[in-house]
Amino acid sequence: MNPAIRIYSLELAQRALALVRPIVEDLVEARSRWDAAIEDLVFPAGGEWRDPLDPGLAELSRLHDEIDGYRWELEELGLQVLDDRFGEVGFPARLEGRLVLLSWRLGEEEIRGWRPLLLSQGEKGPWYPLSSSPACKAWVQEDWGGPPEPF
Image (cartoon, rainbow, N blue to C red; front, side, top):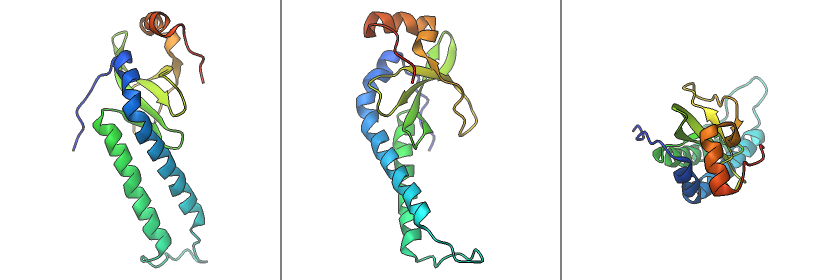
């Protein structure tokens, strides 16, 4: 199922963080468990695959499904997952007439930057502070007390 295309304003994206934050926290935690489970797998000499009923492989399969579920929830909200290890997501938005991703990362209180909207899966593109955009700069200064520091 393709999620509906949603274009966020900066204000709406900031308000959506209350809903998005717990999903991203769960995604990052599941990804961390996935990475640990991968490290715990030991392949025998010769590279033969393990028994498909091996509990380690079953756990990887379960974690894969869990991660996909969190990604699906975020995609249903119209977001792109930019980095599931650090919890970075992008909110599609219009900025000065072009489509961009307003970028938010787990641990931040608010959206602080944006990235170009790229169509290739797995590419994030460069990060720019909101203060680099005249349209966002005016909004940030009026409503948030000044431009944020870049991360």
